[in-house]
Length: 502
Image (cartoon, rainbow, N blue to C red; front, side, top):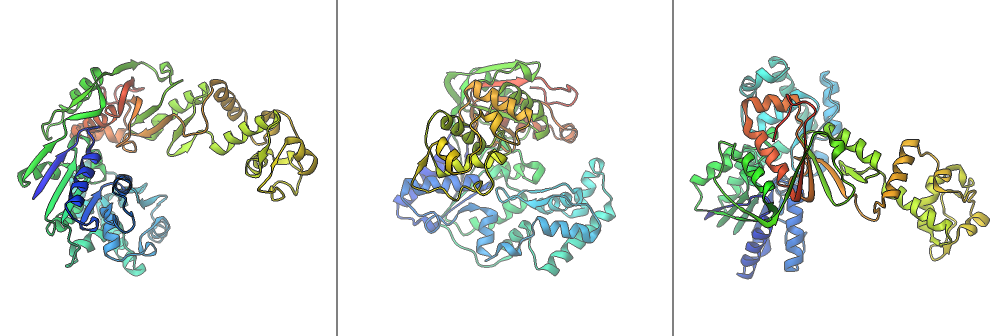
């Protein structure tokens, strides 16, 4: 029996799946007889953690089949990391072939391949689409700036390199898994984020579900935004002809009623090939605001998610945050390190008479430079069980200053100093992650925030894609707009001719 569960934004898809897991465990099915596979490592890990907490289970033993498909293939084939193609291998391959490769790697989080080399990207995409390489090239040659013969030669050389080094890439893992005769049998199989699976992953899924008694395929075709990486949403949609049942979760616990919900529906209804579905927003009315320029946006309070189609479009937003003293995070890095902010706070407390422990003092010493006498800068002389006043350290532990932070901390340039001053004046909290998170829409998939700022600019490549496949961009900006729990803020693009106009 196979069932599709459609989960529009914020409808509690993971909760629904785990409720089913709970029911099957209560019915006597062992956790190790349940397979739960997701496109992203984050989603698979989240599901495993929630299941472990809810059912009092061990993640490593009881929930060992809560994984990504790549991870499952890796485990079943008995692979080790040393036998997998890595960044250094691709660089070595590039040097051997005389082609520039700065970056090339498979993401452990979702299995997608990222490279600055177009030849490698095309080779990988053809494989995940299960297409002949040269046929795929011919279908895309109007937007590619590479040589057909060179592409074929590089592909052959890459095969030879991997064979000589006895290395595998992520696609090799899945192909080997598909070719393997004996597989683990599950009584119940869950496939989450199914809209993002590539054709090669669907072949793997079919291999697994052939031996499963029940299969639940969960996803949302409207949020299929990984087509660039080979995702095949059309395959997911076509499954409606061969499954036994289709269930749609129809209540969103994220999207507010009113203009945000109306706008998101307006966007997604432009998509031609999709599951026809409706879902109800929350009763609370949302707020939709538009701006001609990003400098008009007030992000002085609240939690924000700033979304864009490409990272470089965030430069103006970062500049605004630094000018206004707003604490932000981009690509997992805080605009000012938490270590530095804690050192600054502790320094002021220290100057006001507080006592600090050895870890707090060692952290401060790391920023004082020559304001700590040589021989004391490592902080090894402090006792872990004691606390020290500023005067104690001046008298006995090499501290040479008691001035304000901007006169004592070395290595802070004027821009950083001014940014910190503004942050402190605004009362930005530093004991937790920044309240402003910046990300691409792809990177924020599954995330949400009370307030979302959405930029409409797109790259030339995306514009080219839009011209022959508009559905891809409709889905992308629908996904961005549906991250908002209360407010959606939209900024006009810098270039109206190169933008997705909402």
